[in-house]
Each structure stands twice: as structure tokens, then as C-alpha cells.
Image (cartoon, rainbow, N blue to C red; front, side):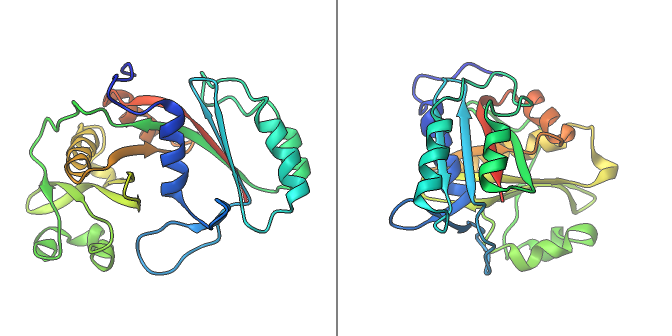
Length: 239
């Protein structure tokens, strides 16, 4: 991945922006809900850990986790090493799962789309004004969310969107990307083009474009690699 640019935030700053984009917080910075831009909300995970390439960690806890347990978890978080290979589980993985009696965890790499990213193919912004023209067939479901998931950038073939990148977690500081490419159109570079176009629109709006995915999502990781995204850390949650 590209070297971090001097004018960009640190890896730890980016991890904080990532956590705050993913989840809503109360006045004590405790997690409340998943920060979806459209109506309705799901509960946040009980535990979030962000490990960075700089060797720092950021941990957040849901509002209903007991303070005594938070103290134990926070002490373990402070002992986590820097993350170099995102597929490596946290050092204290077993302890986290045991303390929280966790049954399900998620984990994955976190990236920043660099400032110089630019689409290599023609892309178009999708809004309510033009969605009827481009959101046909497999992307018709997006019409109900179009006002919330902005910016929304698409690559169009035969007058219909075949690859889309849109904002699915939004704060004033950062947006998280949501990427969808129809199966028949994968492997053509379309995903990288819409990610770059989306990132350009997000930066124009004054926010940072962040891209994260699950450790098992190899296709999404290939997009990040081909796009030269900056890897700043890995997230880990227990629900």
C-alpha cells in the first residue's frame, strides 16, 4: 500500500475516525448503535478494538458493559502489539472472548483512500434526480436509500449501474465506503474506478474516505490492493 502522506492524519487518528463513523456514541464515548445513515438502527457490538500499524490501540465499549469489565479489557488492549498482517488475531483474543463470553467476532483491515486516487474510467454520481435512469434490475433496492447514502458513485454499462460505491457510515470527519459490483462485471477494474470516484466526492465534501472490509472478503481486499489504498490498521469486534 502507499506510504502515508504527511498531510494526512496519523494511523491512530484514522482509527478513531473509523470507530466514530461505524458507531454512535453517548456522552461518555460508550458505543450505542450502528451508525447507519438510513432510518432504523442496530445495537453496537459490546467491544471494539482497533490495532494500528503505528503500534497504538483504540478500544471502545458499549454503554451496558460493566465498568469493572471495561477496566480489565482496557488493560489487555494496551498490551496489543502493532498490526502488520491483518489476518493475525489480537494477542489477547482468547481473553477478550472469555471475559465477554463472546460467541461471535468480526475482524478486518482498514484503509484510507489516498488523496491522489482518481477514477480511470468514466463514473457518474447517482442521486434521486437520475436514479430511475440508472438504478435498474439488481440495483433497484438502492432507490429507497439513495437520499441517505451520499455520495453515491456508479459505473454505468448500457444505461444501468453495474458497480456502485456509496457512503454507508457518515460523520463530519469521515465516510465509510459501501461497495457493490454485479457478479457478471467483476474483475474489470470497475470497483476500483467507483471507489476512486467516491473518494474524490467525499474529499470534496470535506471528509476523509475510509474503506474497511472483513478478513474473509478476498474480493474486497483485492480492490484495496489494486487501488493502492493506505493500510492503517485492523478492527476487531465482539457482539
